[in-house]
Length: 279
Image 1 (cartoon, rainbow, N blue to C red):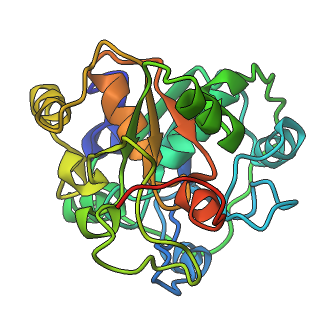
Image 2 (cartoon, helix red, strand yellow):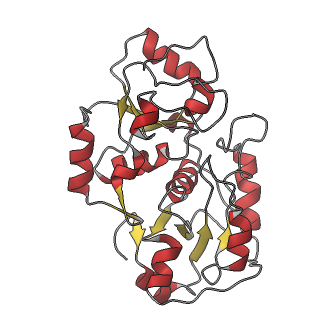
């Protein structure tokens, strides 16, 4: 096994049928895409991999996309998928590490003990010459004992509290630089342009190279170059809470394990004219 975050395609191929290993495809479309990743998973997936739908295993009582589900919603989903908190959950996506970290973060928030991401995703698996299959996947139900850590999930009210009290917390935005600087419109219609007051910008793509995270040395240097103090508290955000998790994982890798994620992110903040912003 590579480390506490990732497994290689070779390792997964060798351990694919281990009783304690569960593989999930957590692919999700970018806001500009209309890709049915569930259908693509049905047509081609790693043997035994189930589809974890981040837009359905979510809080469906809000109009915000793929918000963190209530514990009971997560529990029902993973129990049906035959996943307990003690399984080694290997997550991949069909893209460029866009959504796998969000699933990693979700499982971590609810107390999964052993989570890994497949290096290179589905493309890396195929490039290594390993097989894919089609059709449904079922497992015997399991019980997942939840240990919820909601303190890692940040709300709009908490962001306002930080701003009002000038708390020594750093906001780090994972969106592309043009969006962060309000040079291009948001992909979600009707949202204002700009960023949280005082936020720094670390586009999520800067941490990723061909579906893999860069080295810890490179990741630390990227954050420092953007003026981020890695010894101070950090709250990450993005367009909708998806790629903010890419930053949380990157920060975790370099030892900053207490980063929080603003789940509503710009989909929530940018939709409210009464909230402050910078451009």
